[in-house]
Amino acid sequence: MPVSSILHSAGFVRANIPRFLAELGEFLRFRSISSQSRFAVEMESCAAWFAGHLRRIGMDNASVVTTGGHPLVFAEWRNAPGRPTVLIYGHYDVQPPDPPGEWHTPPFEPVVRGDYLFARGATDDKGQLFTHVKAMETWLATTGTLPVNVICLFEGEEETGSKNLHRFLQENRHRLKADMAIVSDTLMPTPDRPTVTYALRGVLGLELEVAGQRNDLHSGHFGGMVHNPLQALCEIIAKLHDPDMQIAVPDFYNRVKNLSIEERHYMKETGPGDAELLENAGAQRGWGEAGYTLYERTTVRPALIVTGISGGYQGEGGKGVIPASARAKIEIRLALQQDPREIERLFRLHISRLTPPTITTNIRTLSRVRPVTIDPAHPLFRAVENAYLRGFGRKPAYWRSGGSIPVVAALQEIGGMPVALMGFGLASACIHAPNESLYLPNFLRGIATSFHLLDELGRVHILHGGNRP
Image (cartoon, rainbow, N blue to C red; front, side, top):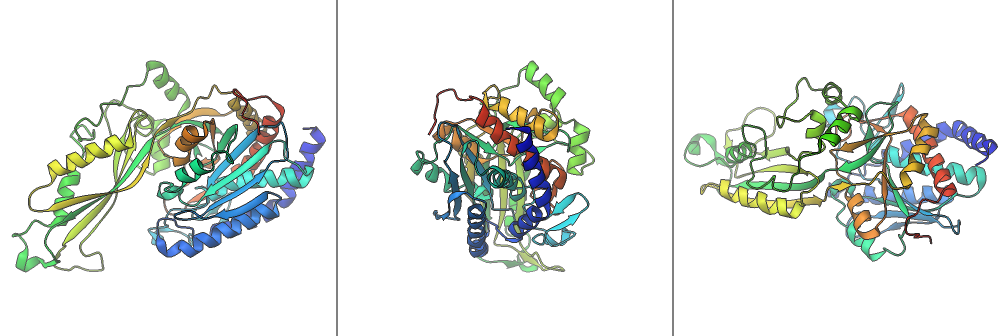
């Protein structure tokens, strides 16, 4: 791209920053909480707004696609014959804002304080996916064209395990055929340290229910004669880790392989240190498997996390009651070689062994996502590195993430395409927690990086097998 065109495009971005932020604010005001059915109408409204926005910036066939759950948003631009096709993925659904009392400002009323924009979804993932939307808008507004063909796929169920995405990808595999995919739903450790993620843990989401007597009981009349389901649940949870802080499910680690000395050294040299991770977590001390750094514990080792417990009286003051049932939500983050279905089978067997005759247990599966790795040697990543160099002033480091993104495995499996995980959010952004934020200087650098990435992909031959449209 000529220097004059680059300067013109940069001027367009600078002139339109207030509008970009206002539009992002509109996007963030939608309470697009996919896990709670009472927000289904708002999910649809958010999808409709987003499809309309993609039409306004010049994308073709921008539409809301119905699924068995929350809708997808689709758009495309295929006016670059002979050029590669890029699939850009993101998700417009967000996590619940709980606990709402810990937010400094209302979670769905975006507020800018200093260099940060605070709102639920600011980083995960509305703010990050918007960098690509604004980069495409800049190309179309300043040149009237894009340097590559683009498919946009933005879903509304990522935070609930992408229940309907796999089927959509299978049924539309020819329409969605692309040479590569770009996903910005990951993080970078510090503002000046761009990062490409090359591995993600898998996840198995479960809900464990413990039931006892038919009804809640008076704790004075019946306390000491029945097994309290809430206590029984806590007793079971206490047996899910052994004294060495490993997961105590038999055969759980059968497929978990140790890293090579070379990779552990690379991770130590390029990844965050223990002090940095504790600072991001707001924690005083670490916890977990002995013999591993905190970075290794959160990326290459599996983890079992209790994410919620409910049962009994939750209101103000006390109530003398023995609850009839209690529930725990559990996430098992999976190491590279582990299969979520096999781990689920082992977990169910373990729970059946731990269940005493005084209660019953039931397990409901909430999500299954395979772990993935990505080959950074693919020629796509030379374009990614150059784009970061142009957008951030330095090439990115490569690191592992402990998170899970369902679409990545699906795109590899169904689409057979390389995926670049380009994170523009900070590790300190409080995603999934109160006071989620987006660091605005990196939002702008993200737009520039995405803009230059499209340019890089349009100028170089990056294909192995030639899946050109």
